Image 1 (cartoon, one colour):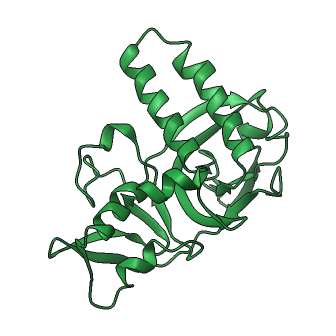
Image 2: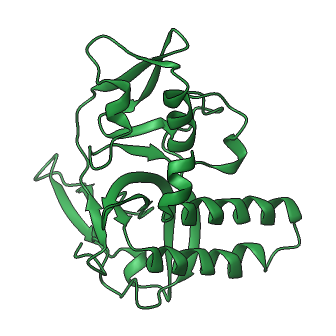
Image 3: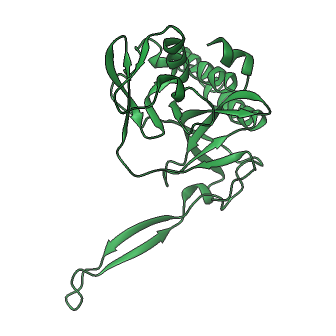
Amino acid sequence: MTPAKSTLKKNPQKFNVMGEYVKYKGTGIKLGTCEDLYYANYPKYIKALKAGLLQQETANDKPENYAKPDNGYRFRFPFPDEDGLPLGNIGDGNFHRGLLITIERGELFPKEEFPVLSAYYEVDSRTQPGLVRKLLQANPNNIMRTVDLEIVQQKLIQKGGFLRLALVYRCPYSGEQWRMEDRADAEFITAQITQRYVNATTDEQAADFWRKANERILHGYDHHLIERY
């Protein structure tokens, strides 16, 4: 996928199984796999680090290195309903969790920008048993008037000399991920969430969840707030 804007950058996925671990209050906990810190969001992690509650686990990176910008690590999005859980605990174990949203394309997501989908079909044939063909399928995000995205992670970066927690989103159809480095792009996302998931619901609990999610997205683009964690 060619990024819709220069500030939308693809997050490459690595296919190995190296786990990332630290000791938290003297007990080893899993942070994630490779760059994907599925079990730790940044606010919880940095608070534990500043409090001196983290120590290096054997054959793993130093705790402070996970919290350095541009080291490649992507933190779990701070889902509001997980606030009461300790670092390393994500409740139901859904490490691949994402918040699915349907939004307008705007100028941010032009059509035919998402990867095509591939599938394999086994042909039922007596003359060529076991024949398998690769099929290419249209990505629904390239066809629909709206776009389906999943909010999944935040990546600590430096931009213009300041820290940012860039939002990482995923295509629910292809599974590919991109990060959003520009606050203006994030504001487009949060405005859509407000319109579709806050203002359009009578469920106050659901509306409050999405308000908090919006706040956390935008906090990622305010270096003063990041430094206060």
